[in-house]
Image 1 (cartoon, helix red, strand yellow):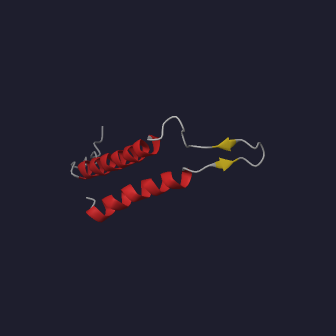
Image 2 (tube, helix red, strand yellow; image 1 turned 90 degrees about the vertical axis):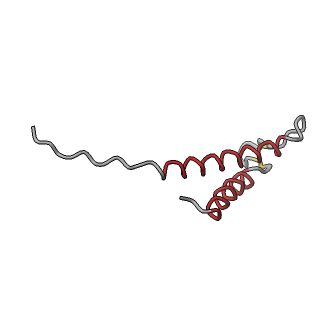
Image 3 (spheres, helix red, strand yellow; image 1 turned 135 degrees about the vertical axis):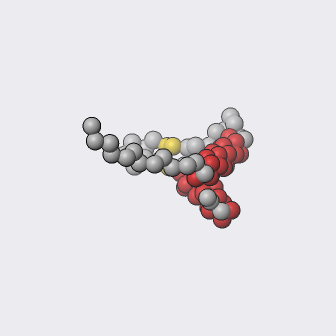
Length: 80
């Protein structure tokens, strides 16, 4: 079971990864600019952060739920 600190860490890790990748960059060879900002949708980053937090919380919930399931016993060898 994950405690509150681990839950918070999972969310912050996901946000940190997204933040590191969310930047304007230029490919050195081709000169192609990768700009994740959307002038036509200024609220995109707000929705993206909300989606990252939602997925993180759902993942934590599922991991917590999985930890309560009984483990399947290994099948016992039955000679034929």
